Image 1 (cartoon, rainbow, N blue to C red):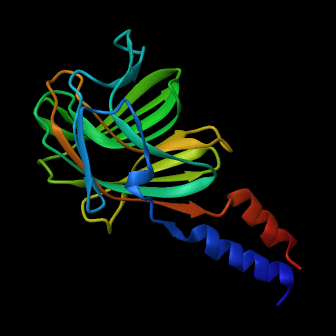
Image 2 (image 1 turned 45 degrees about the horizontal axis):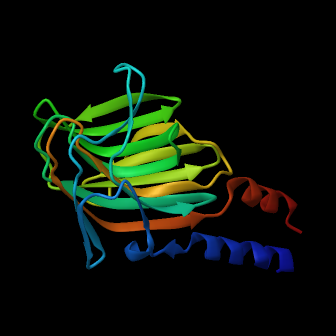
Length: 217
C-alpha cells in the first residue's frame, strides 16, 4: 500500500467525521428577545413580524428574522430536527444556509392556509418559493442539506431514517457559508420554535477526491 493511498484513506476518515456542533459557541443574526439552550436544544420565541425575502412577487425586502448559525467552508452534510407551535399564516422554522443578504437558502416547515407545508426559499438577488403540502400536521420534521461543489441538495424526513429530496439549489462553490437554525413570523405576533440534534459533517472535497483516485500510484 503506497503512502499516497494511505493518505487518501486517512483524509476520507478525518473529513468524514461528524462534527458535534456546540450550540453555545454559535452566533446570532437578529437575536430574538427570548431564547434558551438546554440539553443541546435551542428554543426561541420567534420575533413578531420578521422574515427573510427579497423583492420578487411582493416588491419588498426583509432580512430581520432570528438566525442562529456557525460558519463552515468546503463541502458538508448538515441536519437538524425542527418543531414549532405554528399559529398564523407564514409562520415558519427550519434551516438556513447563507452567504450574505442577497444569497441564501431557507427551508423547513411553513404554515400556510391552515396547512403544514415543506417550504424552501432560494434567494440570489431575488427570492423564489417552492412548497410541498402535507396532508396532516406533524409534530416535528428533520431537514438535511448536502453541499457538493456548487449545489445544495435539501431533504426532509419524519424519522431521521428515510429521507426524501425536496430541492436542488445553486450556491457559489468554494465560499464559506453561515449555516444554522432560523424561524420567521411575517404576519403574526410570534410563536415558540424548538431545534435539536443539529450537526454538521464535513465531506471530502469532490474534485480533490476524484483527482486522488485518478492519480494514485
